[in-house]
Length: 378
Ligand code: PMP
Ligand code: GLN
Image (cartoon, rainbow, N blue to C red):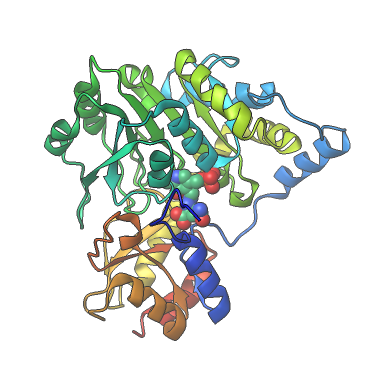
């Protein structure tokens, strides 16, 4: 068999969740809530299903949902996207990212990413024939190095993929970061692919820096988000993309053939649910409480907590406990301690191992308490 991705194995999220299940471990590895969404959301899905909305949605998404998305973005970030030409509903953020890369990246193009990088980005770029140009972020603060970025940009740079709040480091970009990015891409044809799936999970009163908040970036950006994170329904796999019309036209050329359209009753239910902005606005406080609870519960452990400014992830160093590599340490932690985590080396193309692992705290307090009791004993 001739493989198009010879060096790619099974994604770390599948590996660790499977191991957690086999060992009966508490699963703080793959990022998903262990609590349910509200009944009100399920009622809307049932309503639209019974009302007969069970056939193909329009290729670009249900108009009501596209309108709700455009309204939200205008209210929060100040950019008005055209509901018909500049908003598309996708089968989660993963499909949106893959489609955007496929639509924009040609063989020989370079795509700049920040490492540690979410594991879906690299294979998408490679399958498009692009070359990955990684810019390394380092523990403990994982700040972008703008001099490295200036050096990385060249005539072949087609795209820069950014992700704030950032998975796995839980860092959040500042307005100044966005200005640096705008300055470095000014006068170029570079497309910014901005993965904003954690846009509503930014802590300590800090504002999310959407590309839609920065007009100079918005005109060159494809912005991706996901309802899975915002409404606690990662299994529904519904997200969206907004982009200026010329870019969106290219995106849709691919989207129409790799998914065509997305779950109709779920789109209608999400449109209803989005009408109450209080829901997504409450998310930051909701997860900040969980972050603080988790950090307090781990304070007496031998793990060293790194900052968590956004997302529902917490990085820790385990050097006081073990000198194993991070993948081995996560295996041991899952099997012997009964708590599963993600090794951060999985987010580096060369497997760079800084002795840092990632926990997901999108869990009930009882789950976090039980996990931390175990973690405090090691
Ligand atoms: N990007 C990032 C940074 C993510 O963390 C995730 C999933 N947690 C995704 C994209 C994929 O989102 P979805 O489940 O909507 O495909
Ligand atoms: N994005 C989730 C995480 O970082 C996992 C999603 C997946 O399993 N592909 O844990």
